[in-house]
Image (cartoon, rainbow, N blue to C red; front, side):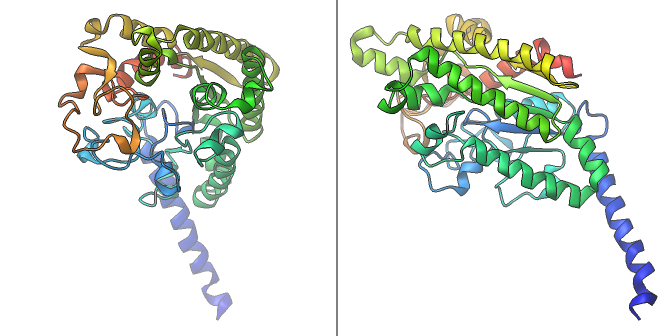
Length: 359
């Protein structure tokens, strides 16, 4: 009996595989890349932290009030974040789902997936501060994803997606603001230049591991003018400096981005077939902050959420009477993260001036 039905079972399995492949093709039909795959911190976390025991969450109102359906997904914004805009610009769906989100499965992740975790960084000790997913664990999830993708689509189709996908990374801010400048451990071991080199070394190992796993199109995200985040301005205000940007932090960001740029050049020479770019948001972000009205903003020094000075996460309660009614007038959504409108402007700049190389 087993022999009699074997051809029929094989035929059914072939039909299932063909349907899966067709679904993937339909999802990415006309797209410039078959998928967008994301690693990093809260600037690109689509909701992975929802599944963790950490205070760094945003799966509640007013977060997400301008997202599709007004749903708080765990994105640290009133709406979409950069990978969402980038995926849409590359012809994919207008959002990238979080890998740990139980609403999605491998059929959804075939066209893009986010492994990022708010609060993480290159340095493992950074993620330990707030009990979030370290970078090495994001890579483990990615390896697991590859196995699922090959089982779902077959080895050949899955490997094509893996090699042709656009890989976005964005991290580093937490390493400095939540680790180096906040805790004594790293400062007692490294001066700031040495710590930057330490992080760049981790970034290099990370890219090389991705390369070994099949990635060929990689965007390393640079740091924003982190001294101008509302939280840092507030610290400067209470430090007697009038709430101005912490320029020493901005200098660190510029220097770190410069080191990443050198790394990008070296990797492109060393690794055959790879294309690595630096998506540096620093100067476009700084232009927005210096002349917000030119971009349609009214407020750049404080955030929309609550008082806009120090609140983020659970402190951005939807009942707070100070939360703004129109986030489009604000550069920042909470004290650490941009509004959807800012994310859109910066993403559009990066797409046109950097990521166009992947078109």
